[in-house]
Length: 147
Image (cartoon, one colour):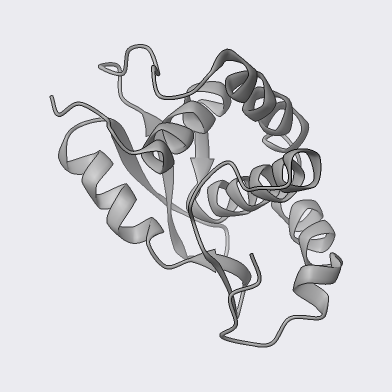
C-alpha cells in the first residue's frame, strides 16, 4: 500500500475514519465545513483544497483525483446504491487496511472529529441548507473560488 504523504488525503481518511460511511456529496460538504470553521479559528484552512462555487455549492475540483487515488490504493471503498427515486449514488467508506493517520496532529484530528460528529449523522438536506445560507456561498459567483 502506498504511503499517504498528502495532507488533503489524510484529512479525507480521517473524516471517513470517524464517519465510517458517507455519500460523496456529504463528504464534500463536511470537508468544506472543516475548512470554513478551521479558517475562522486559525486564520487558515486545514486543507489546501480550493472550493469553487458550482451547481451544488462549494466543490473542490481535485476531489475526483483524490478519491480515485485513495480507491486505487485500497484506502477507501465505493459501494453503489440506488435511491428511492432510482438514482445511483455511492457510499464511501474507509478500507480495513487504513492504519494510523500520522500527517495530522492530535489537535487537527480532534477538530475533524468534532465537525464530523456534528454533521455526519445530519440529513444531507439540513447540511445543504446550512451551507447554502453561508455568506461565502450565498454571495459567491458561479465558477468562483470562494475559499
